[in-house]
Image 1 (cartoon, rainbow, N blue to C red):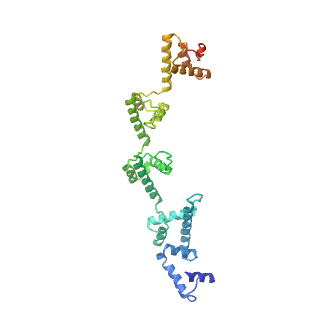
Image 2 (image 1 turned 120 degrees about the horizontal axis):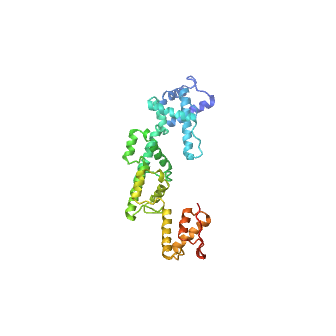
Image 3 (image 1 turned 90 degrees about the vertical axis):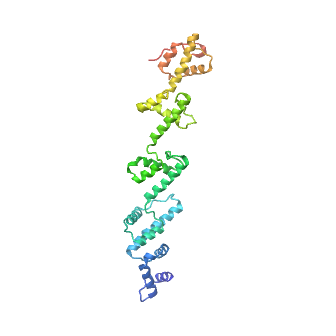
Length: 324
């Protein structure tokens, strides 16, 4: 190698057999035995401008461009590193295609193996994500990775794509996912899970009006709230199931009616609506506030007028005509 560099620096060309027989034979040997050279040997020769021929020279130029890009990727951690050129990307894809068909020369396969080329990135990505999903199940007991899971967003996105593209997956991949209990219809499974939780709540309390802040079964209260908001979109069978569990479709209306019934009972007993009970007095004060703001429903105004509701509080009572 040293003799080769010395000659090139002095002559800027390769020697003939007559000028330097030993160096000439060494150069010829390197070219003929290209297949047996190690990656480091090829790299050293390439970096000093050694010519392996037109075909091999172009191929090696692409190879070491890829090596350089990978090294910069490791140093920067893939941050602020531009994507590989389209030409390089196509070249790598072409090497994979040749290898798959058995057409890639052994010496080139050897060199690409030395730099750790991923011959099947799609399959290897699948294996990596599948292993991550198995670890998730061991940790949480299920495969329902939350949407946008902060701990591993790529896994969350991958699981979502699996459900979306189920029909496109190979039979082997579907069976692999089935073997670990993968939920293909997570929304349906969640619905049944929440129904069972609501049933348990009903057995305990006699209804399924779960507070949004209920901590014993996280998420159940929010689920019930969402069902109330989307009642018109629910199937008849789901509505029947919920009504068997005594769901209150409008708990705010129910609460208002209960308070009104208590106040009405007070009126029927005493003939007036001035109350000393703090709960009812607070509720009555709130109705006056809504009336002043113009947000009290006309129906409720009429109901309160029927029991001579005191709109002015402790200073007297004034009947207000319900709006139509």
